[in-house]
Amino acid sequence: MPELNRADRLQIMLTPEEISALDDWRFAHRMPSRAAAIRELLKRGLAADARDLDTAGKRSARFGILEEPAPTHSGINRRGRGSRTGNGAD
Image (cartoon, rainbow, N blue to C red):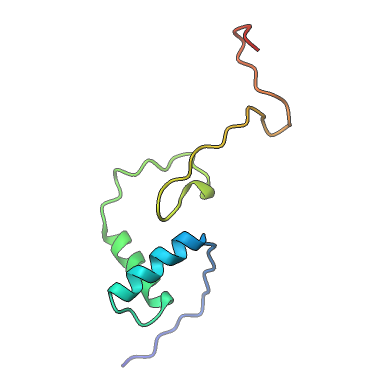
């Protein structure tokens, strides 16, 4: 078997539910490790047609494994000021 050169390391953060889903998939498909399962899922994802993904302008935290998290809009912008609608209903 040819030697694999995997010099780069990729670290990701997952929720306990995402780890559970990954492990469930791994065991159902008899994958030898989490790393192997993740590589297989990446391979499958990269082979899929991604033209229908609406990813423009989304932050990293919006990309979950199980489902997209609900938006958390506090009405406060980055400078800590409340948003103004300009319609007099502030």
